[in-house]
Image (cartoon, rainbow, N blue to C red):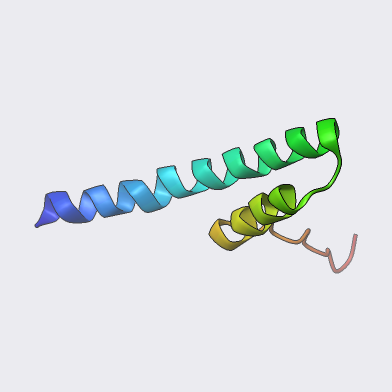
Length: 62
């Protein structure tokens, strides 16, 4: 039972972010070569669903 939880954690902590980064990189590479297409938009949208880009934090005083 604990092994199953560790495996699930490993997938969520490692595999999902790597897949999102790979899809985003592939999308940028294809877009640079051939321009924006439906495939590149789909790859970017899928990467955003898996792991959205965090907005930059605003600093209050500086």
